[in-house]
Structure formats: structure tokens, C-alpha cells
Image (cartoon, rainbow, N blue to C red):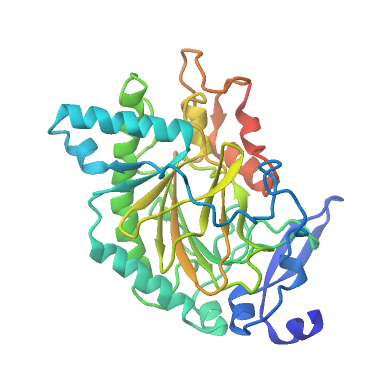
Length: 387
């Protein structure tokens, strides 16, 4: 079977440093091309574990027999109009309390009435579907692939060995801010021709939402409302974009769309298209499937916000599961202070983490370590910033 697949499927080329420090090349199957073959089996490189594994044992558990467990209490949904406008102070206070609880207990939450026009989201949906509607050859001709820390372009990331189980995903990555970050690099698709314009409109609106949330999160801690936002220089702060495509999978019980992880960002903004039921969060020693309404955006608390808040807000441990008969698209924006910025946790010594406080870190150094060690079976990257 493997020989037949190798003969008929396109590959991404990935590079990694092996345990002996030697640069290696790996040919990674293009998942969309596998899905187009309508296989009735899962290729070996995508198989995670045997079906007898215990899915509840630890966050590192990879089998998702519980992939259809729904969140017993819905993921908190924040009304951004109440936070941003604040006409009714009691309503606003209630919304801030809900926001604080979500950031502390879940590490993620939904937002509604966020002010991003449906037309902007529809345009993003159209260009994303347009790109992945191209043939593999057309996609490769439309955009480049750059094997750097940011791993931008069309391809694969976090490939660290030949025997590593692969995620059932194809993805596209670029940096939307600072504006000139990708100058000279062909990381924005040329087809559809309005791809960059549509995504940058979404980024512009979403960045304003993130700034509002940074203010609001500070308020919930009864500290200076500028304490977080002042880390985000208007010209130099970064917004990374990742477009994820999850094709139908022949064995959802054996594959993951994205391996469990926390986001390295301060805040992440996600919009999804076509299908729900693909995102899971690890909470109360269980993987819970997030019910995600079509008109809502999802916000993830990232590692950098956990550091900035000295552990009061916790980055979520989450993953994407696969589905048999549906395809799913998502677009994730990762909002970070400038790479050279040194961020500092709240100074009062209080922490929501029973075991660790946090220290100052340089954003770029944290991200470099995160990319170097990821993927990890447990939440290890954050230890880089713990005292």
C-alpha cells in the first residue's frame, strides 16, 4: 500500500535536525492529495496509537475515542459590544467577570458581536477555499515555501523525524504584521489574486479586537489597563497567519488534524468554515469537543499571555481532530509583541500556578525555543519562562 501511495501522491519537502545534529530531508505526503484518492485505510505515517490506548490518562494521550464528547457547560461566549461600548456598567462588569473566568479556567472563549462585518469573513472564506480548490501544481506555483523558524508559505511544520506521526492537515502560513515582514518572500498566494487583501482586512479588524481584549483582561485583574497592551508596539508587533485545511479522513479514530499543543502567542483569533466539531480542549482530565457557533470567533489564550499575567490566565492545551465525511477550514491569527521585546510578568508575586512563578523573557527567544522543541506530549514550552 505504501508503494502505491508513494507513486501517486505529491509530497512536501521538509527539513529537520536529527538527534545527532545532522540536517535531514523528509518527504511528507500532501494530505489533500491523499484525501482525493478516497482511501479506505489510513497511511501508516498518520497513525497515532493502537485503539487500546487510554485516552484519559494524560494530556499526552493521542487516541481520541472521546472525540465526540461535547462540552457539558458551553464554552463561555463574550459579548464584545458590552465590553467595548460599556453603556450599561452592570452588564459590562458581568461580561468582564465572564471573560476572567474563561481566561483562567478554559484558556479559550468565544466572542460574539465583535464588529467584523460578515462580508469580510465571507471574503476570507472565498479566498481560502479558492486556494485549496487549486491543484497541487497550481498551489505550488502560486506561493513559495520557506524553511525558517516561522516556516512560512505552503507546506508542513513541526516535522522532526521520519518516524513521527504526521497530522492530517495541509496548511499555509504567512506573517501579516509588521507590514514589510514578508517583503521579498513569495508567501502570499498569487491565486486567488485578492487573497492577501482579504486576509489583511480580517487581520486589521481582529487586531483591534485583540487590543480591546488586552485592555479588558488587565481590568479583570484590577491592574493598570495599559499593563498588557503597552508590550505591543503598533508598528513592530507581529501577527502570524495560519490557514488550516482538514480534508475528510478515512480513520478519524487513528489520526489527528493538529497534535495537542498550546499557542505560543499572547492571543490567537480563529475563524472556521464549512464544519464544526473539530476543535478539542483538555479540561478536567478530559478532551472536550468545543461547540463553536458559525457566527462566533474563538480566542485562545497563548503562552505569552500566561507569562504576562504571571499564571493567572492559562494557555489552553488543545488539538484538532479529524472527521470522516466532511472537510473543515480554519484561519488562525497569532498576536505577539515584537520579537525583540522583553516581556515581564505582573510584579505582585501572585500566581494562578501552584508550582511556578514566571520570569522576564525575550519574545523571540521564547518562540525560538517553542519551535525547537515542538511538538511535545505535554505542555513543556512554558517551562522556559518559569522560575
